[in-house]
Structures are given as structure tokens and as C-alpha cells.
Length: 266
Picture: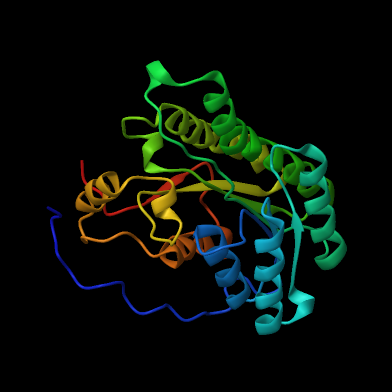
């Protein structure tokens, strides 16, 4: 049982123009998960946003819906598989063409899966690591090169996971990749500080979205929910709020940090 059988999520937090005038790219942002919630929160906070996603149809629908709400001048999208370097470059090119020098990159793209290590294939390992860790590396490298050349600073926020800290059966590839994202965050932060760029990460435990059942079993989902002190999963926008904090000026002295967005207990 969870520690608390509490009420549902709190009221949605209103915007305060925390990212007014900023240019941002969010990967894996077409949908109802953390990436989609982050894109929406960034727009609500005044940023102009370019969405990247490997699902072209879902991306078109998401961009069209956000453009109707926030204006076509502030939102755009490009298909982007973070395993493909030219697609990463094209995504950042679009952001610079539409909105000027890049201020913020959110690396949200990742791939999960469940397999015990003794039964895991090389292909299963490679797929998860290439998307989740190496994809974050590719996007971060491309953004840092542009931010360094522009000389105007910037922020990178990576999406890690509490699984990078805590053992979970069947998640060796995902856990290794997310632990790698945390280490990449620390090293990139040390290097990028010299040209005014901050690099941090969020580490969610469990965020609710309609596709969650596709990547886990009902039993595991119940077990993970039972570990949460609030007796529920986080809403994606609750994680996005912390990403907004890390992307904005209130976190100006933070770099190389991984912030847990979790009520999970061991």
C-alpha cells in the first residue's frame, strides 16, 4: 500500500512569464507525456518552441493544436529521430531560422523496454541506449556547439529517471542509459560553464499518461504507484514545472544537478 491515500493532483499552476522571449527545442514532445506537457508549459510561460518527435503524424497534430492556441509564429515542429544526426541538425536549424539563437534545449526523447539481463539481446540493449543516452548526447552536442558560437549562454535540461539511481528488475538497459544521462549532465555542465551554458536534469519516478500501460504491466504499475508517498503518479505537467524552473532564471546558480521529481520511497 502507498504511504498516503491522498487526494488527486493539485490545481494546475498558472503561468508567470518565466520564459518570456526565449527560444526552446523540446524532443519527443508530440503527445500527452512529459515532453508534450513541457512544450505547453514553455508556451504558457512565454517561450517560442520547436517540437521534435519521431512520430510524424502525431507531431503534425500536436503542432497544429498548439499553433491554434498560442499562434503560428511561436510554435513549429520537425520530425526528429534522435538516433539520426542529420535530423537533429535539421531540428535545431528550424529553431534558429524561426526564432533566432537557441536559448533552451530539453532532451526528453527516450526508449524503454523490459527484459531480464540474462535474456536481453544486443539489439534490445542497443535500441534503448542509442535513443536514451546517445540521442541525448547527439542533441546536447549540437546545441552546445551552437550556443558556444552564439555567445549568448543557454540552458540544457535532460530527462533522466529515478531508475538511474534505483534498481528495478528488467530495466538494466534503461537504468544504465538514464544513469549515463546523469553523468553526461555533470560532465557537460563543467565544460559548458565556460561559455555561460547551464546543464541540468530532472529525474522523475512515475508520471501518468495514457500510453503508460503500453510500456509496463498492470502489476508493475500498481507496484510503482504503491511506492509513491502521495498514492498516485505525477501529472506530466508537475514534472514540466520543474523543467521550467531549471530552464529559467530562478535556477541561475544551478548546473550539473539532477533534481528528483518524485514522492517515491524505497
